[in-house]
Amino acid sequence: MDTLKQKIGNLIPEHMVLLDCIEMASQSRVQIVVDGKTAVDLSTTTTIARNVRDSGLLDSIYPQGFQLEVTSPGVDAPLIHPVQFEKNIGKRVRLKMWGESELIQVEICNVSEKGFEGKLVNGHIDLFQFEEIESAKVEIKF
Image (cartoon, rainbow, N blue to C red):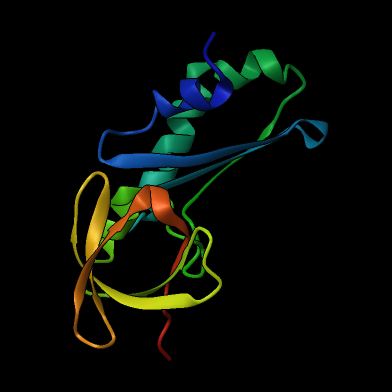
């Protein structure tokens, strides 16, 4: 049986990635978080919201009505999908690897389905597998 997240995922445009679908049933509220290789703009989120509303998918779950929010992750949100790493090629990220206590600063150089090549502060290029990364956040410069 398909979950709500899977069903909503089928309504997301191909150039986008569904990162999360958060259902707050007690508030009759659903939040959809999407990202893509290009910036997520208002037109994209509006189209996705319209597609979900027009599908009738949420009408059966929330017959009294619902609140729908379609958003992108914030600048300080962790990277969780390969598309997000690809979108940030050339940027520096802070990685926390599973089982390690120290953060690693690395510049994303090249991305594949399973991981990415990154340039360490000392200039050394290393390969980082997504399954070995506990968290990754883009360094924000002011």
